Length: 275
Image (cartoon, rainbow, N blue to C red; front, side, top):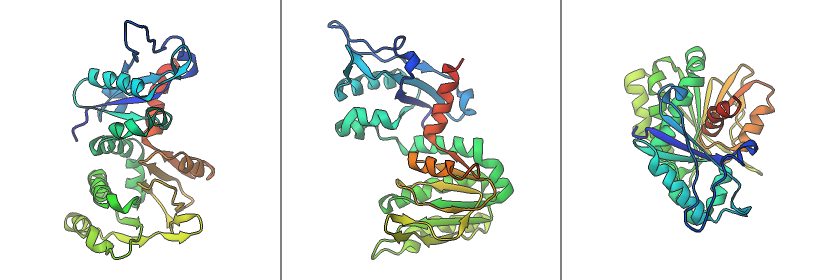
């Protein structure tokens, strides 16, 4: 995993507008101010950089996507070591489709964030429950998702006795052939035989079946898949940081602990603003 620094671009808290305004005069470019944090904040997994973005860049005019993207680039270039960016969803909309592809998160960054979340929130649950359910997303990314799942679970595989994958059926595709090379890895070293179950098609889209998931749920899907969960505490790890999924978990009245890269980074930077 190469990513050493993750720059988190997010909307500036209201109380910071005056102190962190990105100003533009005729003799200088619009500039953003970042705050370098320490790797201790993430347990040593990566070094976070906090970069709040004011809602306006000059005389209360909205950010032009090109100007904002250039200002963000300069922050990224100032970061130490191998650096990547994580954008809050509201910032993604500001940079527009033209520049959004430039800011897509690398696989190594997702792995860093996932490994950090696993260590901080899921390790104890895996030791106690030994169960994992993986909600796969787009079939076009199956290879990436299967590889990343293995890398995230590898430090905990000796504790896991149940591994279930939900997948989207694609006509003319054999899921066992598509994923066989990855599934075999679990059996060679750990004698673990994963299960594969297709999502069910309903009027509103795709969803998981009636079986209840327990332990840790690892979710790669862009849209909610509505897994049923056990009544005991479940760790829901949403790698795509979907707000609707978080709301669904909140409705469970404390039965599910929802975690995501977005919520995790928000928590890290918020502790500094609350002091």
